[in-house]
Image 1: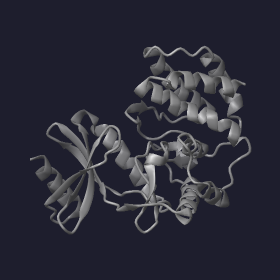
Image 2: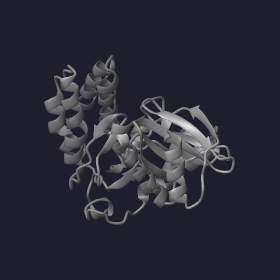
Image 3: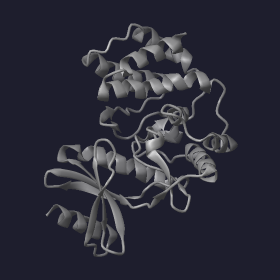
Image 4: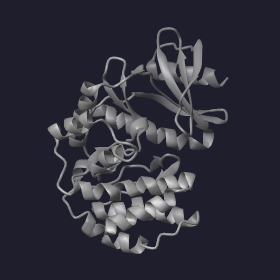
Length: 297
């Protein structure tokens, strides 16, 4: 019954009959189940989670939709989403993935910079993007953690409250202790005193969320979209081993990183390390405290 409902939903939005005859399990990330489904002509990628998580899939689809509309870097086009029985699902364009080479990495950097440079239309709520606000029209998730996107005029205030402040709050509930938390949050206006243009960012750009098609076209996926400092994306690419040097070369060809990025990137990556503590516990607590000490130096 579940597959029948999903086939019907795809048929409805595509205005042509789709009846899946081939289904196989594929990777869906850390928290979802993924499937490839096909009728022999068209193939789609479907992700599943519990029905209670449908808002997470809706936010992912809307983020992909907004990035797709920039006509810059390739993302899987969202087809539809909803619930079927006890499951939530999102259906995306199927992209046949291959391996990246130097040319692909350079192009990924250039196209990400083009997305960051994209001059957004006014948001549906009349606040964000090129209008000067930081945030997004709805909250979404970073991993499975809620990500708060309340529109805020000042970037330092947004980052202190809705990024680090929120993660610290969750971490304390899990027994995390941060002796320099107050000092760090008070220092953020000074640490983020550079001029920041609101940019559409991917929000969760590590190596597992980027790749290339078999034709060599760079692709990014699984976003945690919002309007923020473009440096948050570049910083995260360096967090878990780093992207190819060609990626950074390509990015800087289009939009040179601002002076002071090397200092700010640790502050931006602290958000993800705190989130990893909240999701997985373990050594991320001591890593977070080391990063805080480094930032306050």
